[in-house]
Length: 314
Image 1 (cartoon, rainbow, N blue to C red):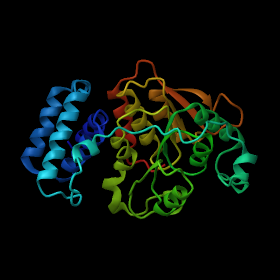
Image 2 (spheres, rainbow, N blue to C red):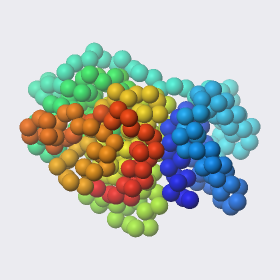
Image 3 (cartoon, helix red, strand yellow):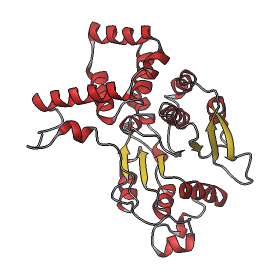
Image 4 (tube, rainbow, N blue to C red):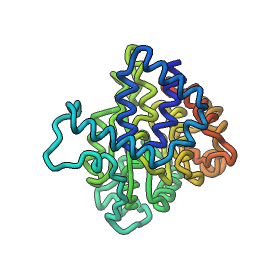
């Protein structure tokens, strides 16, 4: 039951605005006993696809507004509400695309001169071919969602991507990247417990929260992204969660990339739901694989891939 409820939460909150998704998360974390089980059973009986596709924006916004009003009137676990602040309106504010600089293609010399990027990163992460691919896609994208921040975040900054959200498991590294990023870029720390090099989780007791790393930040994003890039932990699960996020918002032409694709453990899950259009196997020297979702892919199929890989640390 827990597995199915987690999958339902992933699919349903993907249709919600940020407020509804956050409130749903609170309920999922705290609800216990017969009432919680009965609620899950009702959703199950309604059918997974029906539950996902019949949740209209009006219903979601109304539910979010009602819940926000209840929080305002009652004790607010998130802290005091400032006088005169319309919490419902605040929670339902849509993400803004900020045209903060003229768009431009990535150039290493100029980026290094502006201290946006440094030559010391050459050969440490993206191969020259990968960098060229990522830079080209970022330049052409108005929105980017990234799991595993770093050099690609700097490329987004240089190319002037208007809307960006990044997620990482290493809190210190995340703060370091944030310092040089535009102020309006959004960042999330995905807590997976104590970590070692390259954000590898090391404490088995933290396992129950690992699945949250692949989808929790997406629940706060009411609009799809043009480009989703995975270069962190739980890569296949993150790849699937990204694709579900885009599918449920009608963005079937979104691009999805996963780094270090020569690793065989990524192939089966990613290729079950997507088709490679660029990078690995297409461009010589590329270790990044760029996908589009399969034409006839369904949410149920994507959730199945996520469910299979949600604890896979690779």
